[in-house]
Length: 477
Image (cartoon, rainbow, N blue to C red; front, top):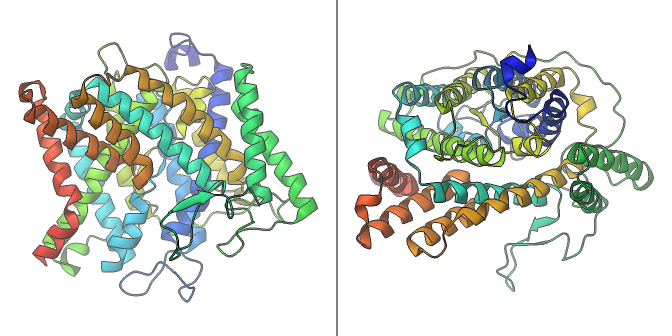
């Protein structure tokens, strides 16, 4: 029954691979249940750096964690059942930061989440009308490959930063270098050492084609972290201890079970359209839609190519179903106050384990739902133990660069910009925008305007507005 519904054999997979891939995907993206509350939530209103809305209110961390896990679990399962792809969903990084910094400061949290919900409805309309699918299919294959490579570098960089292997340098008069290796150019913390050892272990296992290499690497790194912490007592980071564990603490918790607080469900309002000028609200929604739209297009392109699901025509079969469920994720995230949910690039770790169908998503989704009740337990796995998987997957996705024709500079430069802008600006949408705009301009200015799909012109123009949104808002104000 499973094989017939999910087409497991047809895609060259097995039930065990799907289950293993689903577990690995969960472990590599479970950090969002801890990270999202730290981005949009706060422990107390009087904390330094508390994320307050215009009225001084906050979203409690515990409540945000609960709804983050709930929506991620439900939407991941739904995506697996409807779209039948191993692409897990959770709160989108980047969008949540934008909501906390640029949206909630102008209105109340319920009103900010109302705009997120509107963003999701707009995305759904674009899917139903076929616009989103048409844009997805209009992207040249070379740029799709560049998107995959850029995402690979992006998630590798995320892994480096999460593990403390790469760190932001403090501002100093004698340097203009923004980031560096570890602490003062050295691997000077035990958590970062765990990451390095985990990367070596996982790399060796993967090179030797050991089944479950990534999962074994994560588990072994977590065990190493627990033993090491018991000996050296590095402690949690919490922004003040640079040698501590960033997310997740490798020590046995006092409790392993807790009832989730879901009181944020439905706490949403559409009052933003009267609290701020309607044009301001519209521009905020436009920014959310564009970011949501192309983060998903880029991520699904990269994951589809990595899983071998994109056909010879460069298209992902049944992409409209996948895009529709992704749109529902934005609506659900806004309605639950967890911020917009979208397809997660960390799903590539499960794909690397052999996942090819929606069954892997069902496994990942169930684990997210269980995570609501066992938050103290899964936090035992530190991000430093899961980060090696992101680096390994980044290396695998880098292989897509072979499909780019660097002999044609009208392709080479846009592809290059797509690849490097993603990690350098910490945004998939920014990389796609830089690639699209440069592609259209180079083609047009070298006499090949007719080779550009009409929708690429529209999208490039939209990205020009996206990149200039700050000056536009200032001018209108």
